[in-house]
Image 1 (tube, rainbow, N blue to C red):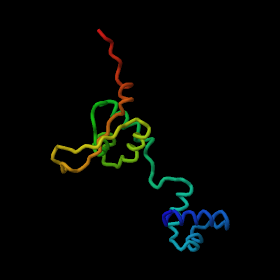
Image 2: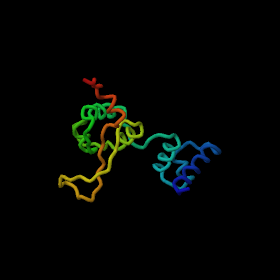
Image 3: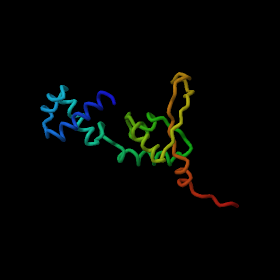
Image 4: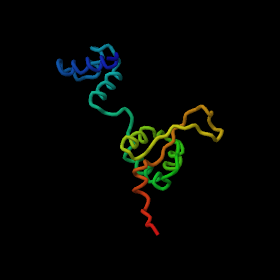
Length: 140
């Protein structure tokens, strides 16, 4: 168990056994800052540290990927096209990957902007979604 996990476990024990609810009192008891106690409490409650934009950004990204089912995009290209400004879409794209909406491929970029040895993550529509998105063609 890491030192952080040990302090969080100790915080949980103090909350359960002694009933101390004040972050300031918990900080004094644990020997950490009040801000650290607030982070521990947030983690004990299972809340995310960052604001989650998934519900807002996923439909926009999915619509763009459906428009171009065979194309690959970097997360920065997607942010620029879909949102109109730079934003970090990593958590949204990784969640889309877990839900089998998008696929990530690691390939070098060959346009001279990156080193040929630098890995670049390319995102595209998951193949299972691409088949549903394309209309079925009848045999002639």
